[in-house]
Amino acid sequence: MTANTLEILQQVKELLVNTYAVQPIVLEKGAGCRVTDIDGKSYLDFAAGIAVASLGHAAPAVVNTLREQAEKLIVAPPSFTTTAKVECAKLIVENSCFDQVFFTNSGTEAIEACIKTVRKWAYENKGHACNEIISFHQSFHGRSYGAASLTEKMHVQPYFAPYVPGVHFANFNDLPSVEKLISDKTAAIFIEPVQGEGGVIAATPEFMQGLRALCDKHRIVLVFDEVQTGMGRTGKLFGYQHMGIEPDIAALAKGMGGGFPIGAMAAKKQYAAALTVGSHGSTYAGNPLATAVAGAVIREIVADGFVARVEKTAQYFRKQLEDLQRRSNKITAIRGLGLMIGIDTAVDIKKLTRTLQGNGLLATQAGEATLRLTPPLIVTEAEVDEAVSIIEKTLKELS
Ligand SMILES: Cc1ncc(COP(=O)(O)O)c(C=O)c1O
Image: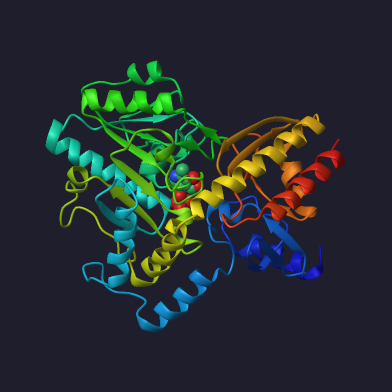
């Protein structure tokens, strides 16, 4: 580590609130699937901002749109209309099962909008006592009070209690455990098609179809948290498209802005209609800059062949990892969907991510011990080969 890097990391300690286990490198720039730190060391970026840089770094669609829109109009009050906002909403609606969109600035805020929507819908359609939500163990929905309350943080972060009441936790992929929690008070079920932070665990289509049937039977709103799985990450535009069902509402963020902060709640009309004038809002959400960039990103992702290419590269990646698993006795499990891949290994996860970093590959931890690989969706097979060979070398080193 150079003196320059050391000095900046020291400043991080002094100046920034200590909410992250700060990585020992300082990133400066990126292009495609690679980033470079201030010492000039290059890394293959299979973290991609935690599944955010969907088109890679410095993607022309993002950079050009940002520049052009910034020169035209950066901000407008949320009650004012811009073509960027309308076109971005149209792209989401025309390519999904949803009818209306509420823009947000992050995934957490998208979840917050979903919570308020289902609570208001249930209040008006099923009575004020119908205000409970079912979520899942090991889920992650964000850091605000509402989103954290769906995330079962109370056990590890008791100092924030009381959380939002009326949230119950079922077991992922276990329908009877959901059924047991349903009552007249159940307004909604929130679920990730693939639990990301929880360890990259995909829901089974049968489980999701069972949830849909339960929701239909009991008039419960089914909300998919597609913050990580949406926008092509899983090899389809949305995670729900793997499941043979449609949710009523979805939370989107991460990949939809390609790195620019934006999120959205997308909902079927009857639920979207619950949010009326004054019931929700945000100064920045849906601003022309963010929606222009997201529009440009989504246009690329929905273009002919893009998502099919993601699926093809994902299958190739999976095959290379499975081959590596056969060669190495260090990989104990490979999970995930599309380019959202989790690997369990016999190696300490902190040591593994750190050593991978030293060897030129950025990846993140998910759950207690899972290595999460979420490269930009434009990743090539050659870059996959490079990543797999770094993983192989690193596992050997750590033997
Ligand atoms: C599934 C899921 N939901 C919600 C969030 C929160 O999104 P944000 O960090 O943009 O607020 C995340 C972030 O990791 C996520 O993975």
